[in-house]
Amino acid sequence: MANFIDNLFGFAFGKRQDDPIQPTVTDQKTNPSFVPPDDYDGSIVVDAGGFLSTVYDFGSNYKNENMLVQQYRSMSLYPEVDMAIEDIINDSMVFDDEKKCVELNLDNITEISDNIKYKVLNEYKNVLRLLDFSNKGFEIFRRWYIDGKVYYHCVIDVTKNNEKIG
Image (cartoon, rainbow, N blue to C red; front, side, top):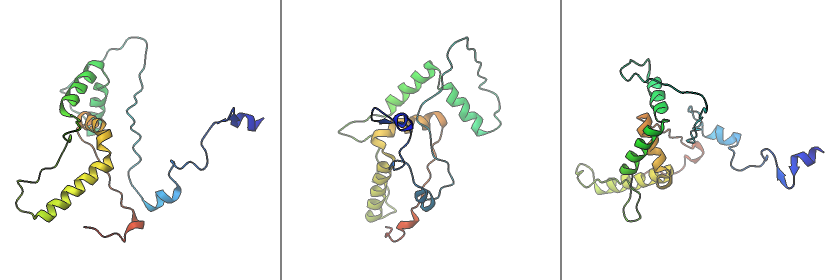
C-alpha cells in the first residue's frame, strides 16, 4: 500500500534523491557563502476579504534602513503604485533585437590602454551573461527601483584556482 501511495499512476510524490537541481553538500562546502540564498521569486501574499485602511506617513523617521525598504515594498503592492512602477520600468528598459538594453561605452576614457578597455568590455559582457540580463533584466531593474539598491555576492570557486586571471 505504501508503494501505491508513493507512486500513484506513475507520478511520484516528494523529491527524488538523485535530483540534479538540488545543490549537494560538497557544492556548499567548496563554495562557501555568508549570504543566505535568495528566495525572492516575485510572489506575494495577498490577504483577501474585509476592509483595508492604511495611512502612510512619509515624513516619519525610520529606525533603520530595513524598515524603509519594507515600507517601499509594501507600497508597491497597491495596484495604483504597481501600475506606476510598471510604466516607469517599461519606459526605462527597452529590449530590442537591433540595440542592446544596456551597454558600456569607454570611448571617452583616455587614461587606460585599448587592451584594458577590451578586457573590461569582455568582463562586462560576462557579468551580463551571468546575470541572465536578457531574460531577467526587467526583474532586476524592478527590484532595484523598489528597494533603492541591489546587492550581489561574488563567490569564488576555490577548486578552480589554477585558471589564469587576465
